[in-house]
Length: 467
Image 1: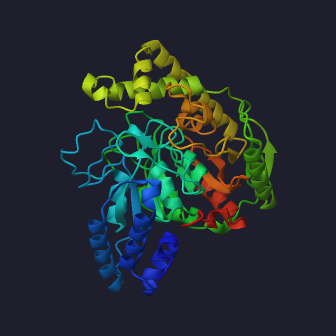
Image 2: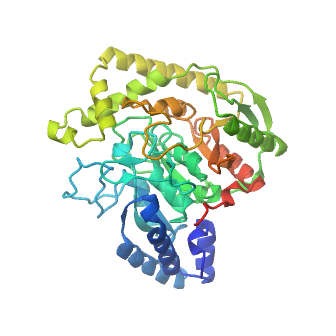
Image 3: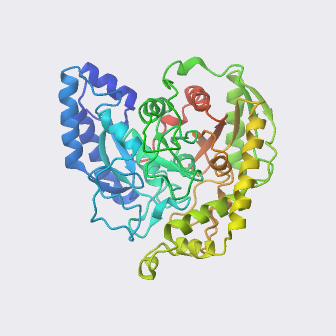
């Protein structure tokens, strides 16, 4: 059967139940898609075909007995190479990580997927330790965008995004410490959710601290909801995780958004967006109005928190890599090594001032959101740019990727749920994203709004040419 690699997870499990096709057939189709295209995209850090087919055969037997192990039994999944997978080296895009050590644990999100029978095809690429908004590393080289292989897919979950967009698997896991799920979702035309901090447990916790989230990256909102039902379960290893909320994210998903109050901020008060991107987002906001939402154009009222974010993020890089032996520092991405060098100038007072500034921003956004169910902005102010560059005009190695991601990192500081849903294409055929930010713990509302918009449009159905 052709086209199995493009079916959603929701449709796959229905097909398995009806015995229309099998997990083995689907795994083979997805592995064939990887083999056909990854020579150009370089989205895979490792492919584990033999293990995947063994898992698919075990799933097939369970479905034949009508005894699936969970809601994603037999569904192909890909794991970002920052998240531990039992039996696989997790090399984090770095030449400094020793692959010859015990790899005997699954990260919480990986463990929940495994328990529910997901078929792990392999690991997706990441920049070194997930440090930047594009995806290239000394270990795996440059990952490319399936919509235009001369362009970046974004990062740091760029491998997961490119893989989902290219039909490698319906379910992919990403991490987001400054936009790392939403940036590549926006650049590749898929859906990505950064859940409320703690909703999806993590272990080990990110060295970059409490700005880092784990979440789903999929081609449809429904699949992200299905994935959230699995991965948003407790894990005692994460002492920052939230108690289970008992929510079925797939339930009542189609009820629409009539009456929701939405704040629309095209610039956050300080961002200059590409005119083509700005128009696509305005058009998307009109669709939300047509669906019955009450939209008000208003800025949330905070100044650009880039300096605060940089101090906190750069301090994480220092804690992670500052004590590496010089011979290992020489193996780092040069721009990351420069960030580590910069971080040595950060004082304890600087750090504490950044923590205080973050608290002020978080409080301000909690109060602002009392008047609105959602805040919407562009996901990014620009379309995808050249692959292999740190930024659209990187003339130095000072880690200035924060400059072109102004809509994403503020909401890592505030820990609110936020998602990117595809909202059209530029004149050059590159995807654009609508950024939907919810109240803290309002993940379900974010998903409901994204699903309503997705159902009213067809952007999510588009496939990159040649795939």
